[in-house]
Length: 424
Ligand code: DOR
Image (cartoon, rainbow, N blue to C red):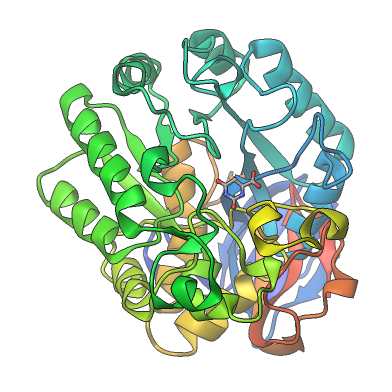
């Protein structure tokens, strides 16, 4: 089967350029790239006016399987990824049971293959049951295919345990992903601590809850040499810590989510529980610092923290609602609307944050369009507009704070291994 993607502007983060090129796909691989490739009987995909990019990678999603299939499954999460333009996701281990052993890692990979839509890379737990007491079987999980380790959702409170985890992860050449949260500062909070939380009568989560733990994990990363990735950065202080650490040469990387670079704590006025997320939406200054961090490369990755919850679970008092919002199906639209069309990031920078950087951090052979690579390709139409309608989501959950928002710049086609898994 030969397919040719014609007339598009190819964004190649590895070569660092954007150029009009055709891409010939044969047998699931990129066979050739160049100007005006002959059709030779191939099926043609017309990408005129569009960007052709390596398949997008979301390195932070919650697929909820096993244990919480009422929120999402590997299949529905894969559908949502494909609809959002993602060809690969890395899934967090806070399932039930927690993904803390090789058998579970293998079962996630098998279920994802059965779903047959996008690549799913499991992230193994740092500690058994993510209880923060003893280390999980990290070596076994790495051998079974875990790409990183994290107790995401549950911070690792014990510094000695985190230090030991980094020593092991470093030997396994896998990153630790830090959910930086000091529980003694955040416990009981529902939103960012500030004037809005006071006005709403909600207990707050101070910026220091993230920064204290981020600082600890940067110190441990520096000491152990373990590649350490700070998840969902939400505060200006965290961006500053990262900038300083990177300048010193610490092996630290970081991600920001579309909700943190788009919204502020003011979104919680009205008590919409879709705005309740951990870490919380912060101030306009924090949001500006995150945007600046993305622009200057302090923050390497855009990841969604796709965290599905059902309407029943979210339709309760703000304090009682679970943290999290779905992100896979709105991410590209938010990146283009908020960051690219505003001139903050070039298309090449945005695509790098969504492809090459997560691939590099996770050590997966993705994020490039070179001949010989798997034909994982996303076509983005920067001019395509749509109003977010959660009823159209293919995720099992609809907990988005972006309903009704007009987005410009959307994925038009998602190809995984030469097969089209989504076309708008
Ligand atoms: O908002 C969040 N939801 N933050 C997390 O760290 C975990 C996630 C979840 O699993 O729902």
